[in-house]
Image (spheres, rainbow, N blue to C red):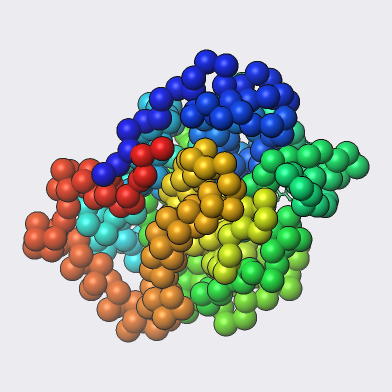
Length: 425
Ligand SMILES: Cc1cc2nc3c(=O)[nH]c(=O)nc-3n(C[C@H](O)[C@H](O)[C@H](O)COP(=O)(O)OP(=O)(O)OC[C@H]3O[C@@H](n4cnc5c(N)ncnc54)[C@H](O)[C@@H]3O)c2cc1C
């Protein structure tokens, strides 16, 4: 059973950002606030719910301004339900990329299979939004009741009796009730506190994402192409004049020694060489790309999500890789649960334990969907392998399979609601 939207906070819940605050059940908090590191998706979502429950929050973000980069993120399943509870559906719909579905093409652009939005196996979900637009929506919905501090990060944490002291890069130190670390995959604060509990699971491929100018042939559909040698390209509608690009390719070695964007672009160029017309188009546009992400396709696996008053959230705890298309939904669900559990009990250890108990199975199931073997299957190297992949793509898109196994609108809505069982906070 999915929870109903939380009631607005009772009167007098928060007297000031720094001051005595009262939670939903009327308990007085002390003068301490909750510190959230990272203003991506998980951090602001958690701040939103904590505010509903009467907590004062401060978000420190290492970047000098809100990071509005990134590509299409899928908000699906239980993540969609969290968005509905936050009453953000209309704002997201207003920024929907209007992707119509997914087409599989061959390397020269000939259509192999067509999977419209809603079809079995399609990439396209009901909520399709660019990550930057989504981050902006979350920022707008929290900025009036959460203190944001950009260009700031934690340099030291010290647990004391009843609080945790955070020292920032400007030398200032402040006491907080709790610290929530939502700094994304390469979180430095996580590594400072919980490095021994964290590992990365490399899936055997590298990934690059960026945007290129939109062209006439970019028809509002996602276009996915398997290239020889184990390369997979997806082009998707971005904003009006941009097309987003995701390239993944097999690579044995997880270490990326090329550390400048120029060197990384050269690495990508080599992976795209001789991979057909679509790859050539990307290569031609690559020089001018500035918002360029390149990295190993790795998952974050943390054996514990909290230590004392410090807790991990979102990609910092359990990045499933952007290739699952689930990172955003997981972050939304986890942020909602963490805030709810913090509010449910005065004992933070109990709250963190309940949060981990409830969310871990959900994120582990998402992470398990990707294995190095599955990644290899999705990136056939030989012409014969690509031929077989095209056959499978045609089969999935066929009328027979879609009518037999394809989800109806009602089934999709049901699956979305039951994807995660929410406690009623
Ligand atoms: C610029 C960018 C582009 C992305 N593009 C895509 C994409 O195209 N497709 C996709 O599926 N996923 C993308 N992601 C990842 C996606 O946002 C996450 O998988 C998911 O939404 C979970 O969000 P999160 O809040 O846990 O992490 P993130 O969204 O990664 O947010 C983490 C935030 O913490 C900040 N931060 C990092 N270190 C510190 C520090 N020490 N102190 C304070 N703040 C810190 C970062 O600047 C960032 O704003 C992108 C992330 C970023 C930051």
